[in-house]
Image (cartoon, rainbow, N blue to C red; front, side):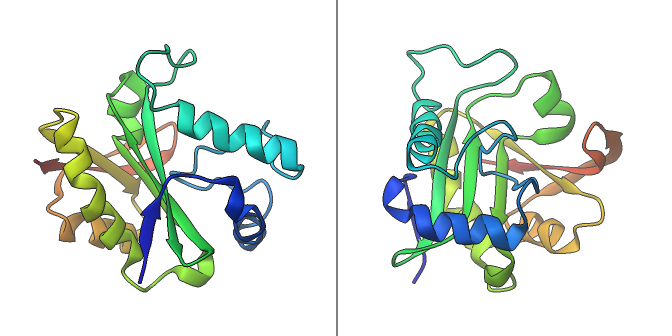
Length: 174
């Protein structure tokens, strides 16, 4: 049975195994991982987890170009399967290309409906933040993600070329 949990250093080995499945340096949507971050050392991983947890703290301004966000890890027991993030607001970039939600599953966890389950689980959190329309995007070629969004009530607004490539933009009414 899957679960959504707050990021934790306790799952470091499983998280690193997932990162290696993706491939080092590969973008993991919804993970909050940036190329400059050191996650290979225990201290670096702890700092990464701390930054994910801190990003939801609305009493502290977010770094330039970013917005407050809450991150959850999708797990089964002590196995990290992926992540999902909820951005509390949209800046210009997120409105164009990134949306309120980001999610990604390690390759071995795909095809099990976990992304749809996680997206549904996060919608009440978006409502609690006062978001009444949620923007969710995906690459135009990502058929599985498009289906996930559509199953969650996503209505396609448009397909456009963005900094992230050809992007499908969906709105979910909350």
